[in-house]
Image (cartoon, rainbow, N blue to C red; front, side):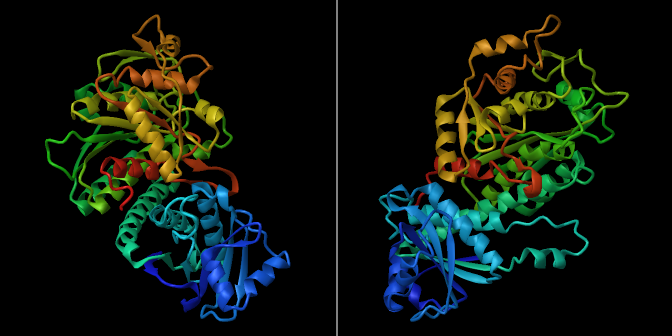
Length: 507
């Protein structure tokens, strides 16, 4: 999709559709009021008839509005003006794109981004432009790589929206708006990249496929890339990771992808993404229902690669390293058994009581490996526990951290990106359930507080640097008729980095 920025009046736009907001109850935003004035009260008359109240996300399409040069005017409900915040803007923007796609409109000009929409209540225009690009790309996303008739599929979906123009009120805002749009486009590209990876079937997206993807990114963006195979991992002592891979014929991979955007003396931010390309549960086999969705167990890896892609596209001045432990988790004659004991890269021994708690085994070796990079901070991203879905549902990702400042940064970035997280406790008492009679620790505790005990396990391998863990089991994909990877938390991580670089909002 093509995006552009300009300033101008809504009644002067010569295109397929102009999008303006309506507050509840039946109150015109300034751009809508301008159109109403040149049309002789055309919009006001329609609102008085009760065709639209202005509820958030409601839409009404008007054709051939008098005094305008556009084919259509799309009215979008913004809700009550005093309650207009980030969520209301996002809902209105999402509803607009969905309506435009259904109308087969090829281009549209958005006045929802104008700062004249009560900036003292709602988010500023720079934020709206960045977020608008993300939402437009998200709503228009399709994954039809394996459809035999792509044209028929796309025609049925009636998606022809190709160009969006975002309006700013004053010309002196154009430079800041262009910078925000560039950020939004790069983040949107990273999200779509992560979604494409997540939606690939497991017979295509194997550990080797992830490694090849990383190598292609390294070539494209001139990054440093190292791929460790089974032999190299054995030599290092990554026996926790290798225990997961024992039941599969697919060879595991440990991917190191290094972006150097700052001086080499600057400590890197290390992102670790869980890359289980299919998780059957191993010997502790999962139920058959929805097991197909376990191709999404590598969405942490996909999000980390998508984030690095966005950062490289923007050429941000930061050192960023992506670590991806990649493996399948399958039953087999050589598979790890419940009760087996392995020694991790850290030297700590682990009694594997449940082979379906495999993600933490990959991550613990990656967390130990991260220490040799002398990181400024480490964040791991993983579809780790069903317990986190029970605790938080599918709206927020779980956040755990051993560093309050890092946790606060992530919470703020989540709010700004509308990719929210919620912090859960990481108290030592929760780790009591991980005690083992035969090893330094077990890989699972009891049923209670499962997301927390999993984080406590990981905390045993991340004591020597600021660390945060994001459990995205509830947010990485959607089920049912809308089944698809979401690309979360690419937006969150990108906003975190932009915050750190003081580039999130440009004056």
